[in-house]
Image 1 (cartoon, rainbow, N blue to C red):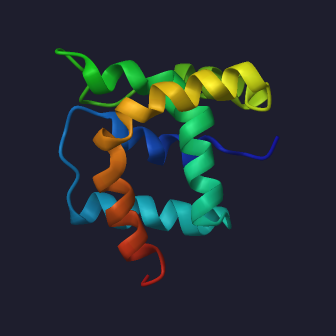
Image 2 (image 1 turned 180 degrees about the vertical axis):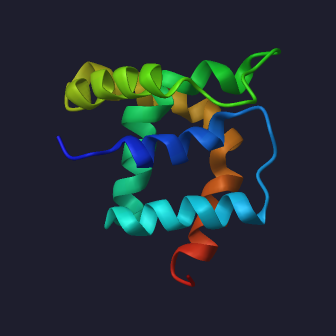
Length: 118
């Protein structure tokens, strides 16, 4: 498994109970570009590796806003990485994402605008 921790940490910003600003988006795009991954690959990493770990924070009344524990995030995302090709896991994740993607959609729109521009 390649080193995905910087990508996981950048994607985790989408799940915090805070607003992202221009500086945040620039930093996230920089991590994404340095990874060498396409936007589609990054979206799949979000969906199958990060979303299953952090989805509950999107709907929590008292959500995490300062940041997630890096070691915990890495352990949980690694677990998801290892099972992301299992059909049941993929189906459940996609069903759960149907109602939750709207909470991350604006972030992906911002990333898409910036990804090709610097």
